[in-house]
Amino acid sequence: MTSQAPPPAGGHPITLGLDTFGDVSDDSEGRPLSHGQSIRNLVDEGILADTTGLDHFAVGEHHTDWMPISAADVILGAIASRTSRIRLGSGVTVISSDDPVRVYQRYATLDAVSNGRAEVILGRGSSTESFPLFGYDLADYEVLFEEKVNLFAELRKEQPVTWTGRTRPPLDDQPVYPHSENGAIPTWIGVGGNPQSVVRAARYGFPLMLAIIGGPTSRFAPLGQLFREALGRFDMPDRPIGVHSPGHVAETDEQAIDEFWPHYEKAVREMAQQRGFRPPAFEHFMADVGPGGALYVGSPETVAQKIVTTLRELHASRFDLKYGMQGLSHEARMTTIELFGNEVAPRVRKQLAS
Image 1: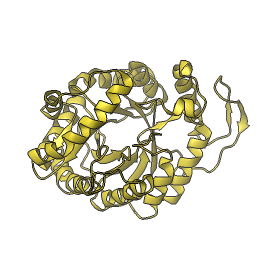
Image 2: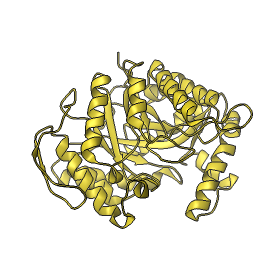
Image 3: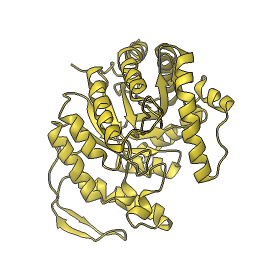
């Protein structure tokens, strides 16, 4: 049985899911859990998402002490073995610092063990720790992404590949195995605001995932319009647009804010120190929590209404809530998953079906 709502005016069914960076939780004494326990908890969270009837569960690649999710496909394989219906994917795979052939092989293998439920979101990633780790030069940032997306698009045809570029050895009529269950792994391009990436997604006919992590969501509407116009220029059929944004769901707005803000403030403050921008103030956080902002923090009713508004405003058909934050307890995350799947998603589907 599908949990998707009937297609909206754009023709794409509404789908709702979760994604996570696997941020390490604290225990009841405020001490960080081990990487191993954090990963095992993440598997349990993916299983719970399946039982609530959500459509997608995605795991984002990172390589840090507090986001140790460097092998998302392995985690997704563990979830696949204990679920039956939810689609499982990356959110995102940093294709620039990986080998597209190996990425395709890993996700084709996930597709096999999940009985055709794998998907992949390709992106540049919001951080660059993978570049020095795997020996890539940040000066090649643009060419790495362009060439590797190009090769991945060829691999999706599941025919012998002939390809030449600057960033890896050429392929000459080379077959690549295994093949996916249904002919090609569903592939999205994740975009954080780069118009060139939007046009690239349209050129290859990939659906577009808008990663909106701060500020007003309305500023992404021009990117959606650019995507639809570019699809037309490239004679590509219409493709869905998705939205990824952070959030946290609790029984009341006040409880959600009280639980989420301390962990959000700590994580973004540490990131600000590393990257040289101003740490967040509570009033700025609340602006993003409010109507039109990029944080979906609140009660099921509040979060559902905000998602409905966002999907309508951006003419999007998919919403993935990035749940969890450094230090936030596993128990609070499980509550968010339960509330999002059992209370938020039905409200969204009902409103958008009417």
